[in-house]
Image 1 (cartoon, rainbow over the protein chains, first blue to last red):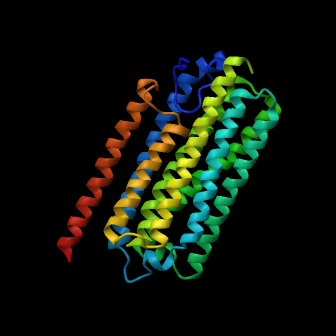
Image 2: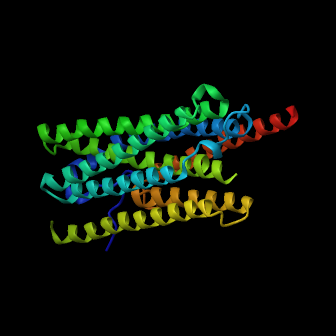
Image 3: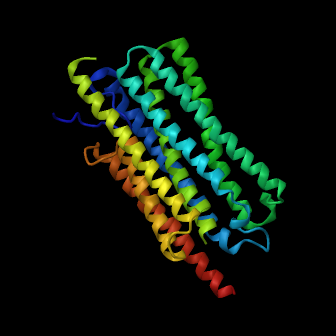
Amino acid sequence: MKREPLLHPGLNLGSTDEYAHNEAEPVIFGFWVFLMADLVLFAILFATYASMSVQGQADGPTPTDVFDLPSAFIETMLLLASSITFGMASLALKYKADGLHLVFWLGLTFCLGAGFVGMEVRDFWVMTQEGAVPQRSGFLSAFFLLVATHGIHVTAGLFWMIVLLVQLRVLGRTTAVKLRLMRLALFWHMLDIVWVCIFTFVYLFGVAQ
Amino acid sequence: MTHKHVETYARDFRSYCIGGVLALALTALAFWLVMFEILPDFERLIAISILAVAQIIVHFRFFLHISWYSHRDDLQLVLFTSLILFLMVGGTIWILFNLHERMM
């Protein structure tokens, strides 16, 4: 079977909704450009962290002292699971005419995302109780800046999800709402990619060194 | 769903499943290497870096559906951004570690 050409990143609506599919290309490309710029922001925070985590410990705690690897593993699993459930929500948006599947998967994604943010806040709380506060050393400043920037992105994604759930209820599955959901999907999957870098280059590298 | 959509649904669904399984396996492997200190230190860092890059490619391919079939701009933009990221991160790390060594 011939592939339908992909007009934009993310799940293409294709022939299930030709009108929205054609509307999607410019708006989603624009959002894609924003996401690439957002990656540049994260890259600079990673570069800062890479040098600070080694050179900026200032006789304070080292990464091995403060990182809780099992907790990071659970957070990773929560965020990865939420990426997969958002994939299921995208499929529901494309193929299932009733709104129930979509709302169910979006709700599940929201719970997993909220669980991730909750775990992260708990980790930060434990760290500050141990005296590992941002002002303690360059390493900790860079750590909190990088990981909290990601956490704030996820939190923004959660608020965005609530807004879209309300819009789905009030406006229904209009083209505009569909395109917004598709952009949120890209945002969500991109945040998972950033988290892959965080758990590898922050948590695993910190403990492995 | 029409017959055609049943086929595309199966393919789209499979894409997310393959991506999910691969991502879970790569994540578990990386944590396993570090938690149980499987390889010598340096090799372990190289191994988890490679696993991370592999997982990023999996996410782009199966969750974001970026592939050679994409509209050209999308893939080119990812590759160009990767180049910029590589220059900025690599350059920063190179310069700062070099400076750090000279200051010791």
